[in-house]
Length: 138
Image (tube, rainbow, N blue to C red; front, top):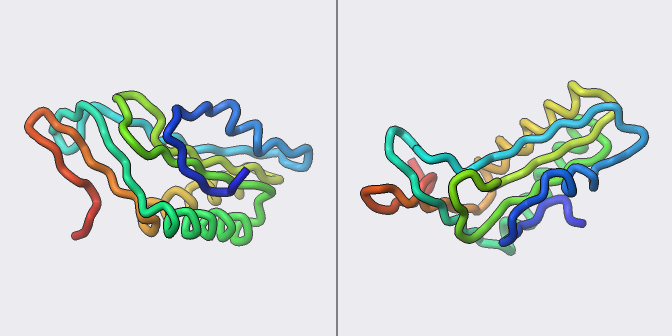
């Protein structure tokens, strides 16, 4: 089990959460990012995610390790989908277990925010009126 990984298969939130079970943990927090049907007023039909996997895996693992150290949590993990995703599918999951809830929430938020900012993952949205890469720059 890696701290950060990609999957081309649907994610099972229950199975992922179970990997963070720890009898010393009293708190657990997770974030789930789903494929929605609109973005900025435009109708979305599906998404494609691509990544520079070698770079993204090391950077993602570094971010998860940073969240563990910075917030003193027991365990943390992130899995991001790549490939084609349909509406409603889970695109990204971040989970954290810790001694207390405050640290779990903070570490989870930190991990997803840093992931979106720093990891080489690109999203192509398929709209009614065409396709567009999202988040490739200013």
